[in-house]
Image (cartoon, rainbow, N blue to C red; front, top):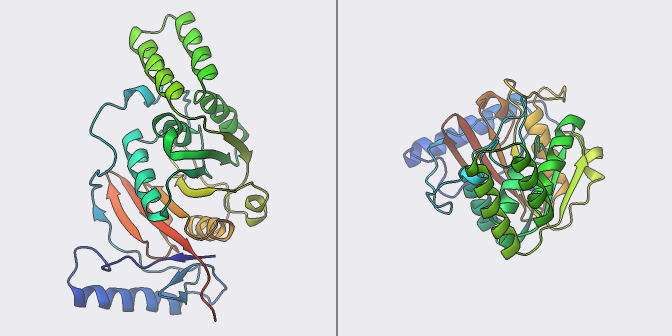
Length: 297
């Protein structure tokens, strides 16, 4: 599989001539400097080596088109979902917006969602609670056993039984009324929507052999919040682990699947090709890629 790397309209915010010059000189010069190694990532039909390549400027801010401007307190960290030191949360509204945009790019209705660096499982649990009508299944994987222990607790909260049990725990802890009300609202959502099968697996997203063992049937959207050193870090020793992850995921997914990468450290994107969509939200740099069938050579 290869990745569609060219955004319609080129690089945002630049005149046409400047876009063409940046695309030509930035990508092609970097490609010549990089070691000539096989790659499953392409730009304009050409192989993009796993060395340094031009990283397109971020489109400033995310204009929310799909995630309404409302309270997401019910799925906020520590309200109902489990959290722990060392497992950074992800903004719920941003997760919803990225999921909906990815679903549009994938061209599907209901879709399977995978977080290959799930940490506490907050992204998949949040979306399974908020958009279960748009999901066929969720898959959470991580290389850390400690992360998976926390993620399984949060995935249980996407079921009526898990939420009812969580309500009992919060009541026993004399939790404030607001947290109990959040559980009740989520419980109502879950009971109204269809069931969403949830799977958990231990896998290193930078290791093709690990990823090949996963059941990825029906997975059409991947959202990965990359480790960024302050609370979590890469387990891989690859010089460009994000680019390696991108190639690994692209090689495992079916054509049309959309991969979303998020990081607060732009340097982590070194080695990744230009993206189909690219923007910045607060401190987060966001990239969206679509997997395509390999072109004939």
